[in-house]
Image 1 (cartoon, each protein chain N blue to C red):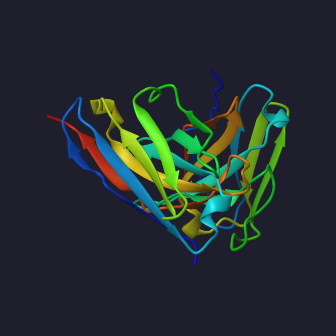
Image 2 (image 1 turned 135 degrees about the vertical axis):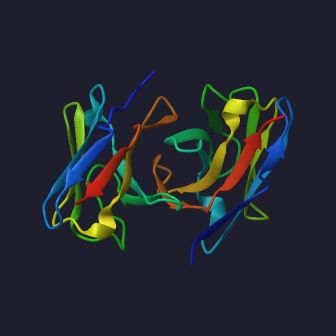
Length: 119
Length: 106
């Protein structure tokens, strides 16, 4: 069974940092692009970042560029999102998602981890 | 930047056909996909590459994409289909979601 499990969310002060992890199982992780998508409370889905299968090509939404870094460890079947200079508007549930065919759609999602940025 | 526009809400009677639209400039030149999200749950892919259905998604879900509009159609809508639906496309190596449509089955 394909499974994605996020962890690392929590409460952080504005300007702080946090690292999210997403552990994958049930598929050949190193063959797939991976993404992070977030959803603020009561709001819609917003794409955050993507890494290719090797981790040597990454892209970011303008709203997080320069503050967030996506990375992956294919030996550990894990993708990460390092978040720094966090702002109140970064408060959201963060989902990791598998790219269905390296084609910019998401065929499997984790359960999400909540990040709250507040003093 | 590229934008996708969805109606905030759509209502349908059980057993009838629901259509949810997603508009964007020359959207028909891109691939569109659709996600269903029920309260408290993660999104689920229901249509990808305009009209392809993932395994496990019922046949009553279908999609089309032409011109400036992609459409998700649910035939014989059931109460379990009540959810938020999001369209999605990609442009210039970034992903864009529509604002979401709340489908009410009443």
